[in-house]
Image (spheres, rainbow, N blue to C red):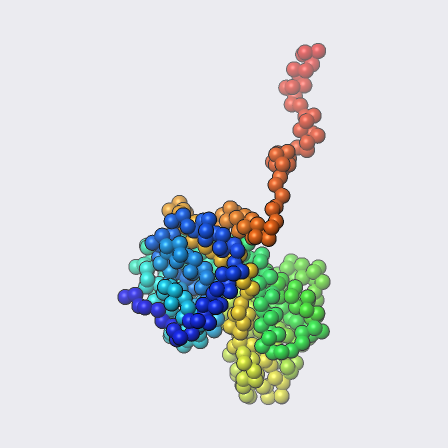
Amino acid sequence: MIHESIIKDSALAPEGHRKIDWVAQHSPVLNAISRDQLADGSLRGRRIAMTIHLEAKTAYLALLLANAGAEVTVAGSNPLSTQDDVCAALAERGVRVYATHDPTDEEFESYLHQTLETAPEILIDDGAELVGRLVDAHPELVGGVIGASEETTTGILKLRAMEQEGALPFPVLAANDARMKHLFDNRYGTGHSTLVAVLSNTNLFISGKAVVVMGFGWVSRGLAKYADGLGARVIVCEPDPVKLLEAYAEGYEVMNSLQAAEAGDVFITGTGNLKVLGRAHFERMKSGILLANAGHYDHEFDLAALREMAIEIREVRENVTEYELPEGRRLHVLARGRLVNIAAGDGHPVEIMDLTFAVQALAAHHLAKNAAGLSPGLHTIPVEIDDLVARTKLFSLGVVPEELTEEQIRYQKSWRSERSAATHRSPREDKERKLDV
């Protein structure tokens, strides 16, 4: 049975409308794609289920898909990132919503399952939350799904594991791996919004502080870049020796995580893994440190161990929990260990998500037109989608990229230099030349 929208309070809609309208003003790429690609009728009548952090930028993507004729249902992908005013506005505009801010674990699960019970044909997923539950709990609906796209690094890891086990029954486009997603969203979006969230929720000065960045993938590269730009002393911890050496070459300090635990003032995780900071680290940290997570789940540091160690736990500011240890040290966790930039902030800048959600919109459009020709499993986003998003953004900035000349194209496709190509003769040509003489 398909239920009506489940939201916190419909009276919150006016503020949600204002947020969505602000996004619309600053999304030139999505607006152009909606006009030029999505309007071709390919999505008309398609049932689309989405679970991405449910705030104004996600809402605008959902609305554009609905405007293209799709029947869209959305759920939040993180209990603390859902904004109730945006949910109310989205429901008022005709999109089915199953989401509330800070639901119980049971409520959160029910929202995702009710989203799947709408029998979607296309999934726009975050962390493989929908795909995993569909395969595990709703096998009778699998046959109706023509394809999905995945938003996050964490989701790609899960889907790859499903694929290796033969448990991925339909094609999934790796939206996270598109150049116009991870090079901008993961790096610049996360770096910018995470540091903004840390500063705005603590009202502390970061210049001169030692910021320990856990990991050195695209997310952590952004974290390090923005912390460095704000005047922090950046320390990177990373198990991959090549990436760690790359961090060193970028000018950051590199350490083993236990060494860094003693040196850091602010710790930011962005690995997509679990328990990268645990009891052994907490035992070495100085009093007053901040712990913030920019990875997908709230288990990047071991909060259960920290709770066991603490003699008192209290809220000292909104979104800041203080853990007092027996010897008097105080460690501070932001946003309960969840994604700090979206659980305690507005997430990535609009202009960054304009790029990401353009990729997602075009992924849904591509699946609607071409899914029948795709085999089950993970697929890269077509290069044409990346190029279209980039060119559309550049056009909005008044920039026209260079075009290669025919000569340059030929040169790139030849293994001979222009000089050797002009002078080279085959042995047969040399023989014929001698006979002519």
